[in-house]
Length: 261
Length: 261
DNA sequence: GGGTACTCTATACACCGTACAAAGTTAGTC
DNA sequence: GACTAACTTTGTACGGTGTATAGAGTACCC
Image (cartoon, rainbow over all chains, first blue to last red; front, side):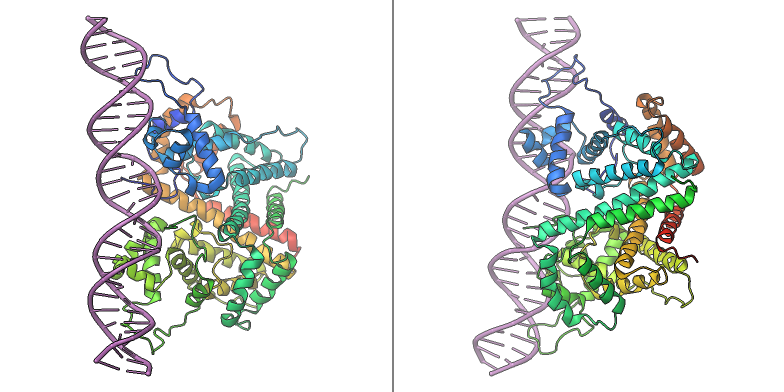
């Protein structure tokens, strides 16, 4: 049984097997192997998973759906991948591995470099919305995770940080990007699921809320909420939230390092 | 059917009914009402849900488990609450409503106030770990959500922010706290689920990883990762991450307002 | 004393991840 | 060339989920 416990991405199974899968190189079949040839590859399974999750979120990622997309029965997948949790680990590593990593110019100021890292991560989340629902602590130590970490650490050169602070700074930036990406994706998903725009939603709820909401009890909330609603036309402005957050984050880091540029 | 689509907390059902539930006051039964008296209350259902989710996460929150805890059959719950999504909405609002909100001193500097807000939110997440798994955009506009918003907006007095910027700043602070809370909770959950401490986990994975990991390809990652591991004894230090993040966030806000203190 | 609105219960359905066992296919060994 | 062992693929089945539906019983209004 066991099933789908928790938020996935675990490395729950045999660690050796999982690592082997993560670092698998193209070498499909080790030649001397009995039984029928495998009709698929791990990559094909991972790609099918990515397609489903990118399109419909983790809810759309069912072993049955992956199997159907590949034209096999569900249990066939288990000869390629130990289980769903490990498949998600592989998908995560694959998504990381495929990110663009344009080399930093030697004279490029750290603000530009960190901004590039933040932008790349935002793009990653928008392309793979299901990533925000995953545990990333103790992520599968695959080639994608490693390459991403290596590249992004390089963005903090010139801030005068020691190794420990550099790791903290990166964690902090990534957390900040994930926070705004989550907000953006949530807003999108809610709008799509309810098939209702922010404005429509507000229109249906406003009259009801007026009956229960005591403006005198929440004066600040009423005033600020209204001001924000007017400023953004009643719509959550993801672009603004991201830009605001990134600017704050960079300023916060600048105060840390004392470095200019 | 429909089921559990997505990350819950939707307001998917009839908005009027949901708002009514959110703002329900103690008035249990409206007197002139046919049929048997209800043996439970919405509050009891919400509390049962909170107990389950606080202890075992959203996975432990099943309608069957809630029902069992209350000594009724699962379908009975549906006379109190339209469905699971709405129950979660109510739980979220209840958790918000129960947060402590000690009034800010008139001379209290904004850093202290914002720090208090951040600390309170961190405590909230640690008490109700399932909150990090929820969509909060378009949260149910209940009394808890409103009271929390009102209170927290008050922390940004004296920063010289207009209403729109004040809302953005609050969103930013809350996002930053949630990011570190998520990391902390993920670390905890992974450790508990795998029944393996960080150190043990590393011990089992390290030899395997050494076979595939090319230190020359990832020099920064190797060096920084090792430095962090040594600094924290191989253990993820949530306290440090939170303090670091909060300090950065406050500095970032300071750069925005230009206000000292 | 109906009728009616309500609460609560039992049953059932479609879906999930995956354990288990059987059937079919290939490679190595004699 | 036959046999065996290892492997892939499949079908079936189990225990779990949220909740639709229908029925049984209860308390109020007329």
